[in-house]
Image (cartoon, rainbow, N blue to C red):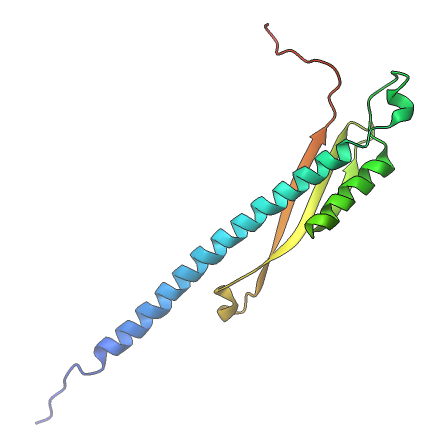
Length: 141
């Protein structure tokens, strides 16, 4: 009579559970890493928009016509900030010259998901700056 025992049964179970746990850890670590990379991209985009917003057009501001940005100067300042931060992106100035929008494109290099063929994830950040001139009091005061 032949008897069957459980030798080796725990090894298969351990292998399956280990792979599943590594997958969960990988998704958690790389998901959190992508979130941090997105926050960084948003921060860089906001700061680049602020830097561009400081390039006010003196030809209109000094005589008191309007407080608007010099589009070329604003773009140059925003791109200079992006370059200093080691990022790339795009800069748009609104038609009225009062709003700058910056979009940052970068990638996050994964730590665990490379095992399954995902070596990087695209990350995008956005920032906006609006010029405000004068003292603005909240309504109702």
